[in-house]
Image 1 (cartoon, rainbow, N blue to C red):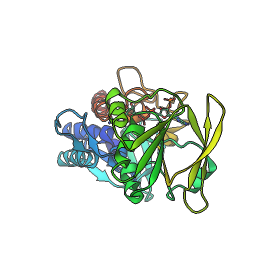
Image 2: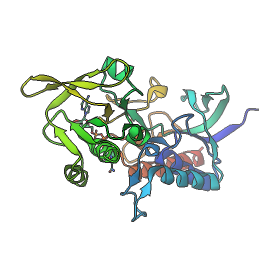
Image 3: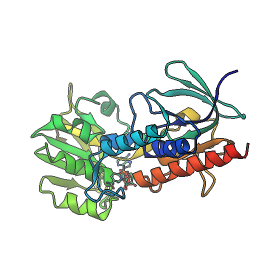
Image 4: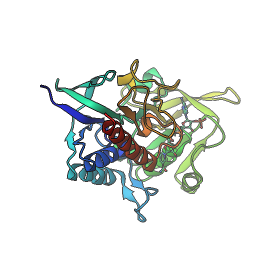
Length: 309
Ligand code: NAP
């Protein structure tokens, strides 16, 4: 007879790894699919994390994820660096297929696929992606020494990207569609105090210019309607994230924005034995610590569910 696992965890950010730590310590022998290219999740692309409790000096995002991964492994989680490409989640036994064609069966599944970078949606943004357009300052900032860069967005991500890019760039211009930033006070103060950072307000990017690589941006002032073109060597897009729920569309209940719906104060989805946590369910807080907390809840919910069956 096929082996039926107690729990398979899909996704490896703070939510997935924390769920694995709890599930492994509860002797549920979790299998965790980390993703083939996205292992570790969004924190792999950050530098200093200053607000994760327990690290008064801050911790590098990739180091934090490596520690969580090791902790999950130490208690017996089986880590698989591959994607789940198909899931059948209704019924008592869930079926999952991975990128190598293996089929797994499980009594419960924890969804922790996180979120992906949001795009502006311009044809030339896509065409020039990797040729001056980037979503990750820590990955690509190094290539822009003494260059002039634009960052689009007004949240914490945009402030963080802009600050980080000033290590390399000669100038960083934050372009925001309103006159007020959404970012937290401390991040705004840091960006405003940085002499290499300038702001363009009430403005949207209407096109990315350049034949082989980015040479500039077409802009539109949303208050006056005035259009202009400005030279830039690169564009960093930091306008938020979209939940990575595409694999479960049509199975698990999603809200209007594509986040997985969970029953209040739990990680229960509409399907029995299927739990969801982290950025996949959360459009409010989306912090490493809240994702880790909900990963813990998902493992406890799965444990109780299995105990009841
Ligand atoms: P966010 O808070 O949702 O901010 C997205 C920003 O992009 C907003 O300013 C928004 O403008 C703008 N935007 C959205 N769609 C746009 C579009 N199509 N064109 C132009 N601009 C657009 O996203 P985030 O900055 O990625 O942050 C997500 C969460 O992670 C937040 O909870 C944040 O606190 C957290 N985070 C924390 C840290 C940290 O503490 N170190 C670092 C990064 C992120 P409007 O303001 O007009 O809506």
